[in-house]
Image: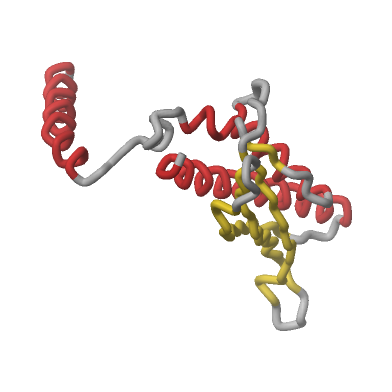
Length: 174
């Protein structure tokens, strides 16, 4: 058993070694490495001031983004502003013959823009979305709790999508 794992490890190492020149030739660069200007993407992400977003779900998205951009540490002096507008919607799914539905698909759509503080220039204008499903049951409390859980899941996914898009943009420009 140990010999097989050793051979497998050797094959992985060989594959990684052989693919390195190919990846470097195609312009591959790690997302959180250094940017074209030589700065760290993590440092650029920590320097983003995220504007308040109205509503409970908006606050969830903002809190997730703040944690994901600073890693739970202190934020750097802001070099960028991130403005986000979200729209919430819910549509019934699994509609039965009598017209009642057993499920709901909760959706979040966001328009966001990244603005440089120094000259107020809009660097990135983009959209992101997320969805989370939940099942309706007899209990009103269970339905409220299920919806809140779906809202929180959708907020986490949306924040992650926005963070990834902004980090990818900053890795190529700053």
